[in-house]
Length: 583
Ligand code: FYN
Ligand code: ADP
Image (cartoon, rainbow, N blue to C red; front, side, top):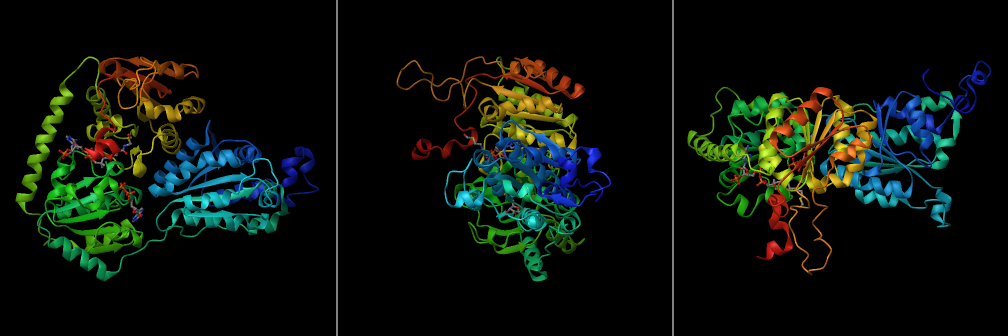
């Protein structure tokens, strides 16, 4: 505990803090930091201000890395992505009311995506807030946060900081991971207590994400259903990616010979060019499969709720692995629920897959291969074209080739068309390398996720961004430059949301709501902060720009000029627009 700084030391010059009063008391600031460090936290994503400015300074003083952002939402997104990548709760630290509210979108998004994060906000004085007497940044933050996260706690006394942090850590990581809110009123930070007692009050959470082994009869039931399949299919979701059970998941798929579909953030769990990948025959396998094994994937909108036209062809039986028991039967009946953590459940299934396990009927595999090869050939032909101006395919072909050469690169991806095309064009080869808009299809995760990937791994990051999507977090390129992160942002610039060609329906002088400044030079933005700007109008220029960014490791922003006619409304989810749905 020698590293702890007691209150006297923080407030007095070093020479006075010496022999007479050695570490007698500890304050709330340091108890919070000590509690986080004790639980393995080494980085805080923050935006300083009243009342947590000193906490960010002291955190640095205590050896924590503090990544300071320009807007809390992006600090929160970074914390969430860090949680997904590291299986430790990502910490976002914000000021009271407005800063707290800015962080809430990220907290809610983390919860929706099952990413472990803790939003810690300073708050105003309870006595004044509760009597609504108009305190500085008055807001009942705890009440507001509650419905948007997995758990919410407030700590009022220094001696409860250890327990408060422990509860937040355990809530974020155990069972289905998610976002947790921790409310720390300004007064708490200045409270002091006996240093020895303070340190004794801290709690190191033991086994925060305990293995949840499935019941034997549930495993048997699942194996029986899988064995009965004529046309089996495995769907891997980001829960499978989060579980870090990569070798066993691969072994289960390879030993059973079952074809599989990766959801977008599960791409790379097995390499996308794996012979058993049915990604390029998606519609066909969803329609025709008779038994579907879901591994950490929910039957939500991204899987058409497990019913309807998408799943039309054949009646299905579902086996579902999920840590959350109430996920079962959420949309359709789950005949063989396997409640437990992915690692334990997959291991249990593997134990039942012996040498006598029959591979899926050859006819099923042949039919999938036929559809897949047709789609792959179509894709190859589209990628071979070199239109002027560039379209999504020709630009993404460049990213595809570079990721194939450098599978260790992280790919952050958001937008509508930019997202949907990149998902199918850019193959991933390693687990958890793709970070994207996730369950909500949220825009604005780009720079926060890119920062988290670079900070937690030190690896290069390419952020493939629609021009609209980039706008949500674009100011964070200053953050990327300030911390000299190896992030290359590629803005797919087609002059607008979806496209740049819409007209004002009223005929007035304003451009249409979906249209941006034509020919904008996003590359100039990063130059203002000392980064490298590249203007790319051809695949060759784009390739050179990305390669230079990777070689130098310098923050880079490439303005990739895309045909403004190239996009479609909402990418591949056009049908979700009310007008389209009526047709
Ligand atoms: C896939 N496909 C391929 C490949 N991979 N063809 C060739 N080569 C490769 N490598 C084929 C696949 O078989 C499908 O064709 C098609 O390409 C599309 O595949 P994808 O992208 O996997 O599937 P699809 O249908 O788009 O998936 C539905 C979805 C997805 C809902 C899961 O659209 C999605 O994740 N959407 C998120 C959208 C979002 O969040 N947007 C942000 C908001 S935008 P067929 O089999 O012939 O069908 C606000 O406006
Ligand atoms: P995708 O969008 O990729 O389909 P989802 O976010 O819908 O994935 O689903 C992830 C699922 O994984 C959630 O239902 C969550 O409860 C589950 N999950 C998360 N972590 C684990 C784990 N370690 N073990 C089992 N299930 C998990």
